[in-house]
Amino acid sequence: MTTLAFAQTSALQTVRTVDDLRAQVAAWRQKGETVALVPTMGALHDGHLALVRRARELASRVVASVFVNPTQFAPHEDFDRYPRDEAGDAAKLVSAGCNLLYAPTVREMYPEGFATSMAVGGPAEGLCGTFRPQMFGGVALVVTKLFLQALPDVAVFGEKDYQQLMVIRRFTRDLDIPVRVEGLPTVREADGLALSSRNAYLSADERARAPELNRALVEAATALSAGVDAGAILEAAKARITAAGFGTIDYVELRDAETLEPVRRVERPARLLAAAWMGKARLIDNVPVAVGPVPAE
Ligand code: AMP
Image 1 (cartoon, rainbow, N blue to C red):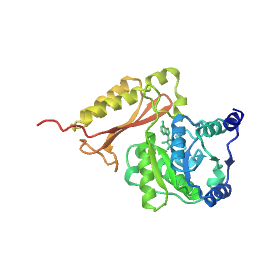
Image 2: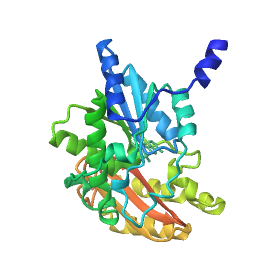
Image 3: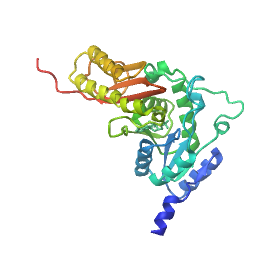
Image 4: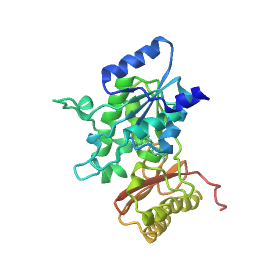
């Protein structure tokens, strides 16, 4: 009983420099341990913790990183007001079985004179790549750095950010980075809203309306499974999202589940993805679209 209480409240080992991270990982490697990495921007919720628990199944040691990455935010975006709570994050990570928190400073990640960027194409094109043109280059840069810093066997990401997951899979393969990329289904509230650190921006009224985004996608995905033309179904989904009180809809689009190329009819596994503004929060969501039974001629 005492031991358990101690385990639950003991502080999580935290490192802030590349050298300290590498020293700890090297010590584990010497003992034959395997290592999983879970990159995050903090303000952790049960979606992040599901990644940590999955990481525990995939490797004997789990490193979580918390770093709000400035290179993936445009100047007008929410970098400054993005929620930050390192103490709370550390307590949650301990409870999920994380072994090490890597929380570098911006200076550690991007030292004086830093002059390198990454350009990503393929799955980075369109969708969020259009509305947040800075984002995927910044994500690719920081995830590549995290991979090279920690050199994990496996890294775990959420399907909540489906386009991001496909971009990460693509550049990891393209650059021959020897890290296995594992994706995990989106963790949702009971009413369907995808857990997100940005849900903290929602008022009570907006929070009550927000699950309509997911409901509209689920309804549309069911209709699209039959292999019909997507046009009218996507328009109906947008109308439902607008009726729920969302403001600007950045996109509601049907894409190939693997390549993320635009699709008009579902003939192989597809993905329906959306981004829309509810008050000050830009919410994203996506659902799988299975190939349904072929309609009778
Ligand atoms: P973030 O801190 O928002 O950058 O997310 C860090 C990781 O957690 C990314 O791989 C996200 O896809 C994942 N993630 C965020 N929200 C969820 C969720 N609701 N379910 C599953 N994974 C999530």
